[in-house]
Image (cartoon, rainbow, N blue to C red; front, side, top):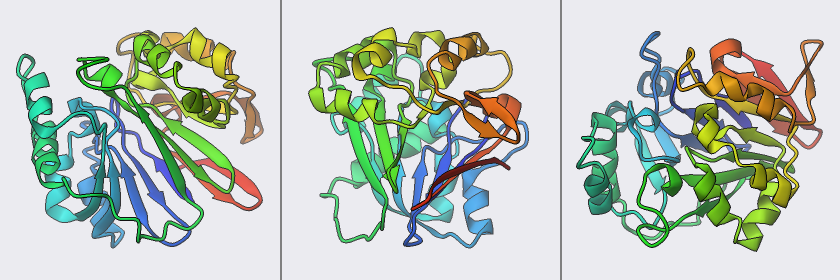
Length: 270
């Protein structure tokens, strides 16, 4: 598996290529400073079809380029919190307004209503998803995030969207979730590293002790940098360019590439 986590400022966009050359995109944010966009990046590399698009959160920064993306590539399967319908999403956005990306997502959700087919060969790539239910458990977008744990050659990486403490603690009631989180090797920080995504119980009750955390953020927004120390003390660490690292951020380090093989994982900045 070849995973690239892009610098899309205070947003999220990651591209996965499996061992069978299948393509998965986690979120569709863009970089407003450099104008980097998945809608331009993918066709530039000859990619015209995404087998699976995973939307981890229903806020615009996770889908800001989606309206352009669907015009340049085809999407096989859309994965999001299944308890939220297209009508639910538009209702959730009534107060704050709906951006072009989330508007495109709502349109997709109305069309992608068939059962997910399992005839695509993803090779060694596996994924498990967890979510809170709308509206019986939560009615806010962050705690309705989709927590995705991807796995390749025994390396497990968690993409939790913008899950906040209350949402984490509700998921902790599920035994399979606790077990899965305890096996995570690399954690993408929830809510771009903001304090309201930092759950003590998540680590204490699952045994979560990743090698490192990736924070996808930009500048000094929302005090996300203030949690670097919090995460650093909860990671094992790994060697990167001769230095022991426990936290990587797209703001400081740029784009992160993680490749897995039967021999393990390699991590680079690119």
